[in-house]
Figure 1 (cartoon, rainbow, N blue to C red):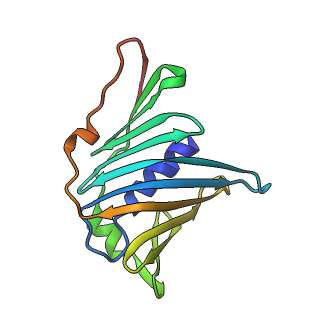
Figure 2: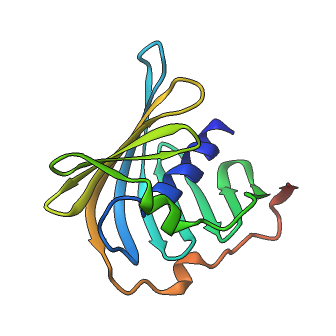
Length: 172
């Protein structure tokens, strides 16, 4: 569940840095390092679109899709043949998050959300990485590669396709 919480908060923060964005399409490498310096590395692709749509497609080391659509998150896990659907409470308030981001240094910004700091690094006004420490003390680093900002992203990237034979777990 801590993994899910990190993804949800990361999605909210993607729009927090002071560049006008409407969409992002990117490959990503997500590294999570625990307090014993052990790490796990995930790879995949991200599509996100204002005001509150995101699709994280994980390809390594396991396949997984995480869809955030307005106030609902859906996790599709093919290895487990299961889907988890959870409400996340409220729509993402992008304007409020943007108003909380602050420049710390050239191309380094910080946004505070739920008493947690999210460090955002840019390279020539292009998102490069996002880093934060979760509630369990794990450091999460998401590096973005082959990023394309403010492009037209087809809504089909956010369409859920749940196989009939998958178990569906719903929660609030």
